[in-house]
Length: 316
Ligand code: SF4
Ligand SMILES: [Zn+2]
Ligand SMILES: [Zn+2]
Image (cartoon, rainbow, N blue to C red; front, side, top):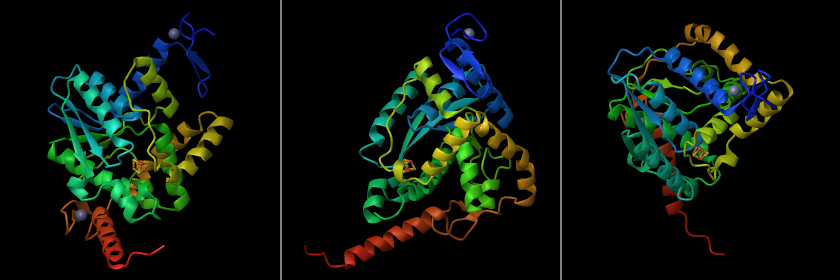
């Protein structure tokens, strides 16, 4: 099958647009949308530092490469990368290796920040202390706070994440299903910066996950293709399945969900404005409460550990 735009053989069918595209035109199709999204989310004034939260996986590696390329003509804007090390021994070291190699290849500044340094626990320790809990409910909170702090300390004006279209549509559905309107209102790139919180950029939010994968493969972007051992227990998996089925039946559903959400965002911002933030009494990070969620979780883990230490060992 030839490409819809030239005579080269097509490498993919973009189902939601009905177009077969060759490698060159497919890459151009991805790059055009990412570039538009970056400029839609930030108005560069010069002197900005953009930190990518780089795990070494396909999404964040592609985000790093594309931001680096899109911003290359602007010598007054700098791209750097921060890799949060969750402390998952069977998974994370390989991702860090890929992240380091990518940053060395691009010649950009790279920081590796272990959880332990900010929250005092590795994910392996969390799982051992709280075997019944869903690991991602700790990991997501710890990663967000670690990345935000590291970005602030690195003098970053924005944090870019590798969130793709599938992730975005899943988050919208998940928060609707939970009735969590406050969280729903705060999804997406930050339009209204808040003190202490480095604003987020999401350059891939209109690119489907499969397209990110194909793009990375076609461009030869090196990335870690592993899966976290805890990902199967993530609630997000159920929403991924539902969304994949909807997309299969009606191509374009993910785009429609995100586009519909974007039309509602101004109303959300008006009706559910972000809460005033204070400094957490324990760590100083921004929070709407007295204590931030990361410190709350650390306290809970500390209690569990103290309880386990007090209980006599069971004899089998
Ligand atoms: S799957 Fe869950 S535990 Fe694993 S890295 Fe992602 S958020 Fe953390
Ligand atoms: Zn073509
Ligand atoms: Zn705190």
